[in-house]
Image (cartoon, rainbow, N blue to C red; front, side, top):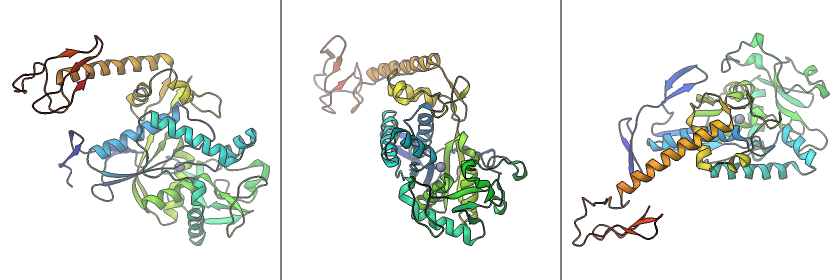
Length: 394
Ligand SMILES: [Zn+2]
C-alpha cells in the first residue's frame, strides 16, 4: 500500500500521511518507515505491578494508545505488544509486606491496570505477555549471550559485560567511562565483588530463600528486569521490529540495557525508540514507591474517564505534565466545550444513517416526518421514512 493511499476507518476516510517520530536513539525526528510495508510492530514497556496504577502509568498507556490508533487509522496493520512485569524485587517486597503470594499480588494489581486502561478507552494490546510465563525464552537469550562472550556467570548470578557491547550508552547519550555502577548492585550480597565491572548488570539473579526461582544451567534463580523485555519483545515481534516505547524514565538503564543485550545477541531489535514524558506532582516524578502519586482510582472518582484521557493526552507526549487539580479542571472544561460542540453539530447533522437534517434538504418523502419532542430535555428525531428506519436520539 503506498503512502498516498487512503484507508477507511468506519465512516471516516483518513489520508495516509507521512508519520514523523522523535527517535530517542538518533535524537532526531525521523520519517516512519516500517520493516514490512503496511505493517507496524510496537512494543511498549508496561507496568511493574507492585501496586495499583497512578496517573503516570495512565499517561504512558494513553500516549501509546494514540500512536497505535493513529497507525491503524492510517492503514497499518498493527501488532501491539505491551508486557507486564510480574517478577521483580518491588513485587516480592510488596507481597512480603502484605503476607500474600507474589503471584497473587501481581495478578490483583495487573487486573487493576487492565480496568483503568479500559476505562480510559485504551485499545487492548494484541498480546500482553508476562515475564513469569517466558522464562525459557530468557534462558535461551542468556545462553546466546554467554556463547558470544557478552555475559558470564558469577556467584550464582549471570551478568552482562557492558564493555563488549558496541555503542553501550548511545541510547541515553552517555559515555561508558562516565557511567555509574548498575542499579542491581546488592549491598547485602557484596554483589559488586563478583562482577568484572561495577557497570555490568544482572541478566539472572541467583535464588534467595523465600523468593520464586526457576532452574537454569547456572543454578536456580529469577530473571533480571531488562532481560525480560528483550526476550518478550523479540519473542512476539521478531528480531527486528518497528517501535519500542515507554516512559522517559526507562531510557536508562532499562532500555539502554535491553538494547545492548539484544543487539549483542544478534538481534537488530527496535528501529524507533519513543519515550513519553512523566507526570509530576509538586515538581517531582509521580511515584508510588516515593510516596507521592495520584492513584488512577482516585482521579477517576473526581472526573469522568474521557475527561481524564483528554487531560493526559492534550499535552505534547514528550513534555512533563505537572499535575494540579486546577489544570485537571481546565482540561475538563475544555473537554466539555468540545462535547457541547459535537452535540450541536450532531443535531444539525441529523440522522446518522441517511444524514437527513432539519429542515431535511435531502429527504423527499411524501410526508416528511416532523421534529417531535418526547421530553423537554430529550428531543427526538423520528425515523426518516424514505432512506432509513433509524431514529436518532440526541
Ligand atoms: Zn521493559
